[in-house]
Image 1: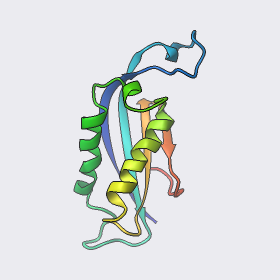
Image 2: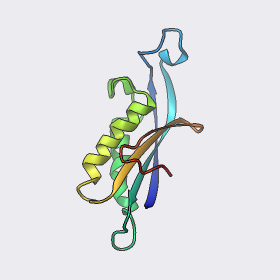
Image 3: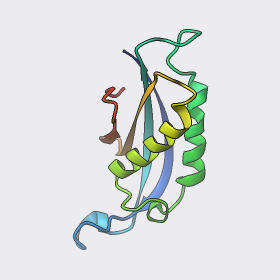
Length: 127
């Protein structure tokens, strides 16, 4: 299996509504998020890559337009890192799968440098 990854970043605020009122995440707060998309394939496409890294820039543009400097609660219901990872995966599946047959994708979201949440329905692993 060949795997590549590309990172994107954005800043945004959110709060969690499904936690107790006294939980720190119930208050509106912000993060400098990192999003990592992983693409994996058992065979390389011409000219010898999984996916052209430039093709993945569509995800960066989507993030900039929909998430950067936004209140994530106005964009996605219950915007945990896990929910954001799945939501961004759905974009990748719709945007990249047809153009790259045989390539599987996974998406990770980090709210801090030490924490990652992944949506990886194809079980390709992470980079």
